[in-house]
Image (tube, rainbow, N blue to C red; front, top):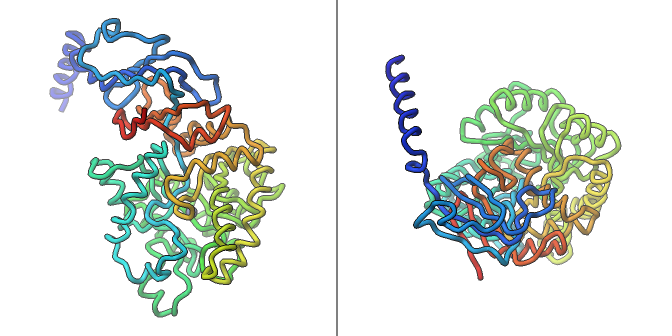
Length: 438
Ligand SMILES: [Zn+2]
């Protein structure tokens, strides 16, 4: 043991001493006309970025030639006419489905896991093409989402970097359980691995979901709009269950995010120590105090509210129990966002895509700006803030030395016109180019 460690140490020192350049794997050099290296700060003009082993290894002022950089045979990417910025991060997507009011409503009972996986392949591609190089998938069968994530990592299919929750942690009959069928049918097709009741059972469920591959834990702390049950949107886990879930997840190194609409459920989840709240529709003064005290993040998902509101008006087949909740919840989401913004709550960008169409994620930016957020802050929410909530702030969220080469480019300045983010012309993830439109 001691010997081999010693020899390895000597060997690597010698190799580095001979020539560090010999081992450098320079992937590419990028010339960026305007480069937003650190969101929240001012962009820089005429920058040269060096990419090495999938990461950013250097950033220079001005355009440096390959000769000046002492490089040969390295691809040069010319983005001199573009606005270059870090890849976008969506903290709330469901890559394994997309709502289609005209589709067979019983897909959960008629399709195999492979059907869902195959249908998801284009959703992943659309998401990456839209400039979202990283996503947090908040709920989808572990039998589908983790194989998709592996296929992306193996470069078998094209998609964003995925951090996934897998099965929801939900109470029996809760928002994450299956509704709308005979009880004996739901017995056969359950809500998944994460259905639990009582603190001990919820500890088991969290361990089970992590065992299946979860990067993050998603709990349904309150009722939800799109579950076909007239159960409202109030608290669905007891305080004891919430505490058991959060402590178990944190001890196993996983963050917890809570789907929560009703005030009681939002506040109980924050008190129990969740890292973020999804939706937060009925947040009140006490919620704001708790958000700020615990530095909890809000993921507003304004696009989901806008999408289901529109569907409630146009889809005659939407179940009555769902229509009632849409009419009740969607209008208050805007006010919740404005209140959070005014009170400096940490906000991370999230769309709930899958409720809306995949690849349309950037529409959330327009809603955030419409409801009072500055374009600069909206961009921070989808880069540095999202990276921090993922626990990946050392690797993602800005263009700095040592971070992953997840880079996008636009033809216009998104701080002048936020809709520029809907027209991403260049997408790179891990120094691999996936889109490059002239
Ligand atoms: Zn969701």
